[in-house]
Every structure is written in structure tokens, then in C-alpha cells.
Length: 457
Image (cartoon, rainbow, N blue to C red):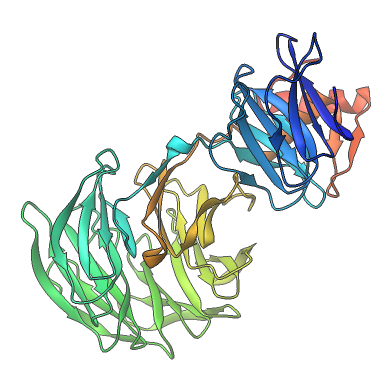
């Protein structure tokens, strides 16, 4: 078996094949009895450090110093799905029994949970769109495009249908009321529009601003609507008739995004001056201090339980805030502007759009798998059941719909314990593996069993 600097190896379940990875930037499958190669090399851009069989030996998972994990067909050598990019050299992979979830460890981070995402989980819409929202039934999406036109699209059907909802210029935002009977559209033509989609699609009211309208939202009960604009104002409207309510909420810069609190008593606004603000719906006055970033605040959303607020900014961060105190409660760092944020319906996950889409655990702040790749994503939304995410990139490409893989049961600590007990090894924050002595392993196993996990003795 010819290989340059073997870094890792693994036998197939039946022992008939041997998988190796080496310094020659390749993983290779061999006939374990004849030592002959069983297919073409599986190539990376740097040494292959870890290899394993999965899916009943039908697939191969490889990790490399090039910072990627790749899934291959063990029969054809074809790459399956997309390359998973961990961001750092990969030195260890531990596969979960489900065969689709694994821990990957590198030199600068403790192990992180990733999911093998099959290509079939990615659906591409047949039209370029600047904004998208799920209908309340979760089966269709309403898309808005650069020409001001709305479209209805069902991912199960390749055809799209044109809607009567339209503007004279680019659509910046679409929102569907909680009862699914009305739609708000926001446009560069300096208006938002309230539509009825209860049976026949029809215009209810035009909601004017003095600048491009960037955002629009309904309150949780649908009785109120809010819009934010380039004119530095957020405005409140009747969600039924479009009648203006109260006085404008004045800002010193562009109002990039708006969101209602769970009880409908507060409106949160994201402003180009680097501040997020809370406003009383009853008095139209600011409540509490400004929640500050070091760059324009581009996105804002309340958690489903109403206790937290999350903001996304040009300073490359998403920040959590305590709604009751307006004090910071967490920070998620990115390498570019955070254009949008979205909580999953159960409040356990947060999606951020910062060039790519990332999914985070709200509880731990840990990444839940690899980024979802799409050019320059600037808007994201979860489906009502939380199983799908749509991302929009405008002129950079059509919207993409990802099916979220089932989450790994338990939290990150449980997954780490499961691997440590099973492998007798622990990885520290520098990526160094050390053996676990029997007494320590028994202690770890007891902790795992207390969390309803199981591992062999």
C-alpha cells in the first residue's frame, strides 16, 4: 500500500477494506486482503488527517488540514453533497450512531457538532428575490423581487405563480399577518402597502414614508403594523385598515428593521446610527437606554418568549439583550456584517445571515453545524414549524431553502461525554488529545448516564 505519511486509517465493518489518509493530500480505499487500491484517491488540498466509514460502509468521511470535512461514496469516489468547512485544520472526527452527525475537533476549538447535509436538502427557487416569507401554512413562500413584483412559490412544485401584490420599485421586505389573511410589503418607492389575501388579493391601504421603506412587521395579534424607513422614522399603523396610529418614532439615521414584542406593548427598532431602541406603543416614546453597537444595526428580533432581543450589526456581531433591562446578554462574532437574524419558532436556535447562514444554539452560543452556503445572504426566515430556512441574496442569486437536519439529542456536554467515554480520549481547547484513566472514565460515564446517555463499558 503506497502512501506518503499515513495520518489516519479505518477498517470497514466487514474488515474487507482499509481506508487511509496521508500527507499526499489523499484518502485511499484498499482491499484489505490483497493490498490493492479499491478506487481512485479521494483528494483534499492539504494532508488528510482523519478518515472513517459511515452509512454501513457505503460512504466515507474525511477530514483535512485544509479545514474541510468531505463525504464520499465508497463505491464511486464521488463527493456527496457539499464540502463542510470547519474554518480550522481538522484532526479528529467522532461519528454519532445516527451516521449523519459527528464531532470535529481542530487546533483552536473544542469539538463542535456538525451534520452531514445531503444535497437533496437544498432547494433553489426559480426566480431571483430580494425578500421572502413563509405563508402561515408553511407550504408556500411569498417572494418579492427587484422589480417590485411578488410571487407565490411552493418548494414541492417547480412552477411559481405571479401575485397581484406589487410596487413600482424594488421590494425590501414582505410580512404575513399571524392569521395569514394580510400581507405587508415594503419598497424602495417610499411606500409600504397593506394587502388582503383572504380569498382574492387586493390592496387595503398605501402607507407613505419620505424615503425608501426598509422593513415592515405585524404585531403578534395582527392588530398593529410597523414600518421603518430611510427617512429616519418608524411609523405605527392599524393592521386591519392601514390607518396611521400615533406620532412617528424619530431616529437620527435610517431605520433598518422593526419588531414587535410578544405582548405588543413595545416596538424594537434597529438604526443606522449604531443603536437599537425600545419604544412604548401606547406613548410612542423611547423606553430605556440605547442598546449600542460599533456599527449600523441592520436587524432586530424578539425571542419567541419575549424575554430576549437579538440585534445584527455592521460591526460583525449579533448581540443578545435582556428586554427588561436593555443590558447585553450575549455576543456572537462573525467575520463580516450581520445582515439579518431569525429565531426558530421554539426559541432554541438563532440563524444569522453574514455572507453565509449560520445556526447557533441560543442556550450555549455554540454553532450547530457548518454554515449554509449561498452568495451574500442578506435576509433569512424560518418556516412556521422550524424545519426549514429560506435565504435571499437579491441579484447575487435566487433564494435557497434548506431543510434543517434533526438536532442531536441532548446538549453539547452530553455529546462530548459520549465521545470521551467511548474513545477513552479527551480533546482540550488547543486540540491536544490525551488518554483518560479508568477512574476518570468511570466518573464521566456516571455523569453521562445521569443525563440519560449510554456508552459501552
